[in-house]
Length: 112
Image (cartoon, rainbow, N blue to C red):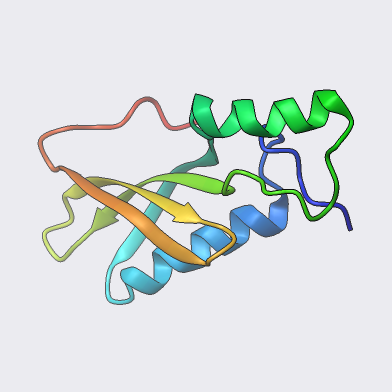
């Protein structure tokens, strides 16, 4: 299977992997996921990739920007008040690379 383009949406497998990694960090809490989506690479990383792609020198072994999943979710503890969190998961390394607790006083955008 060819590697994904850095701007293609997350596959079902990538989304599920990001979900499982977040759940592993919150094993004793209820998690309500709002969204899991592609965290696009920085412009500098993308320019290097696109230069290879447009020059025709892109190969399956060419370096690619990391595939990152941005996860937005509520953590519901014993007080039953959701605490909004955001995490970034590196799909390739299967690790959470960033985590931010936004807090109970803030709410995420509308959940669809």
